[in-house]
Image (tube, rainbow, N blue to C red; front, top):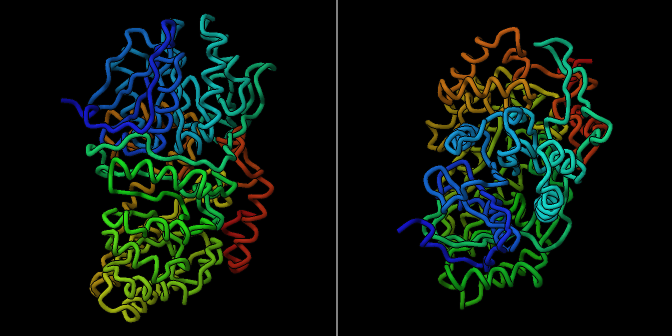
Length: 545
């Protein structure tokens, strides 16, 4: 009995037509991880309800029966390091891992998801097609355009697909460099019939995503997930989840959320509310009242990270009653100055009150997310973070406090995309650990080395494709990447260029031809605003003026 047999489908797959396009939709990880991804579920259901497609699912550990000659093979990518599994899956299907080596008899390889929408360039050599942005409309546009050129040669297919808004064909763009190991000089289409830029696509409807399948084999066992909001109105200057997915959209309560929840709770009693800022839905309290009905008394409720000043006693009590023991809030720093730099609109009193409300409402724990190495951060800002945690412990005695802390990683399409990683960040994580652990605060630092790899892939250009090919043979540690850099010395820039260097505002970025929701002029305006909270000498150093 396979994991597929345990699935409760919440949609009706259709029987494919005789001439349906054979398509494989893959997730580059194990089934239990892939089926927990709401994005993967939605794309699969969208494809499986088209009679013109014959869809087979593929994971690293199991698959449905696969077509002998697939015409399209797609990947949904949620985690950067899963690229290793993409290359392995391609090899297992006897498909060349590099797009330039594929011929007319090979399937079109497409990819989508948050990793590729943010910056596909390090992975450019591996994909024929990249879907940039929300899939609601883009996916259908892609399939419809493919059908028009289904019998054409590969070059015609790719040039036709390149005309569809949101579809990026990396091979149709030529990147020139100032030198083999220098910055980018220009990014141009290879011919005049290819668009010079590609605009990320944004779905603007008020019916957001909800689970299409519920299974006990998922990483979050038997959970029904519903997307309450998309994007975030706060616009913290470092935050890809906010800037890349603008504008902030909310699901219709009566038209989308409640019908979806009713549908899901017929097959499970576990409900997950998803979104970067769930409690900022304008009718969130009404939604809570709905879930609080006696008929849902046995429902276990999970909720994504919530905005600190929306943590009320009522919210805490609802969660405690629904088998949730703790709540997660992102504060980033205990320093008010740092929070102003990043546009985190939070007062110290808000954070203290959130802890008090969590405890009063019956929760036993509070997890806070923090960050070190934020541009403009000074040593005294760490002291403010330590003091904040001590103040929380004093204000809500008995509440289990966890402080998860990452290193600032610059992300494309955000005002902080020009900054590198602060070389003091690893030391600062150690300082926090030294100060918080002995006081009974559960300090959980994210791996500094993982932050370095993440930065490399976040800011990388397509020269990294050959580095990724080599490093996969060495393992997924930072040492593997350093070894690959050593082997490629002189052919690509060094690690410092991608990870630690601050880039000038007038240089061509790897994603300059791929347009996000906001133009660069607006991002620079937001950056200037952020730097107004940094002292002048430090500003000059940070901004490379």
